[in-house]
Length: 337
Image (cartoon, rainbow, N blue to C red):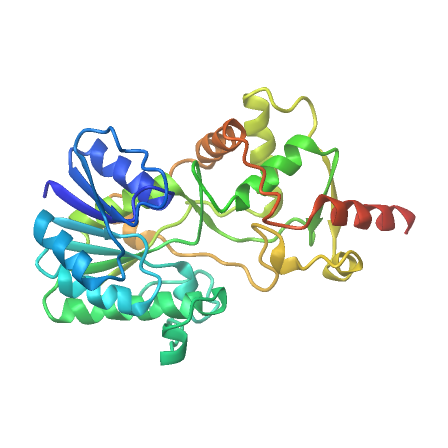
């Protein structure tokens, strides 16, 4: 296999996937609407086709023009997207769908590909665009992959939890980098032991390539950091990374732990706090993909690269969590208790 067609390819996971395949001597074609800057505009061995992935005729024309060996589908957000893609690219040697750990329908610890059931998905949910149905839609996309494999198409899926790393336009992780870097006191929901596994974006990219090359048709593969981090662990890693680049001297900010009841004093919704999962720990078993030769980047290295990139590009995550004003209002109240 020496050619790959990336649906998406210019923003976050897709951008890193392009770099991963280039590093392994693939010729890359990216297919997207062209609404975001193309970081590969002047890169050799990267061809750009502009089009909307929901336009079947445009996608089919691109498939016929390129005839790729591998298809990496980074922006399939509805089951229909996956069903159309596996038909259009059914002759490729590998189709890999970027699913999600949110596809799981039961809170197993850890969640296992061949044991933990997936979310159900109604017809109404399949056509929805809201975050509420995201997991259900991703699960139905997985089922489309499995059905395609039964028809002889080498289709597979990769399921990451929350992804972090350079070029993360969601700025979820940047919220904590900015808080630690700029504040003397920060509010931490709960007691700091909240566990929500994440995955470094470069590890998702390597997983996509490895699954394309070594995965089995009809299989799903979890991909996540080798060691899940608590929220306190995450803040520790951010502090260490900031010290390494000279953005933090001495101790980090004071951490003020707040219960959900205390957060409500300042109208702070726990669900709105980045990297915090109020209900249940989220942990994926990654043994299956490790058997293909995949390995996660050490946490310190992954966080170091992420923090450095966020600082360099001025990402603050200010719109991704509670406002500093609400946080200070809560701190003022807690100081009087």
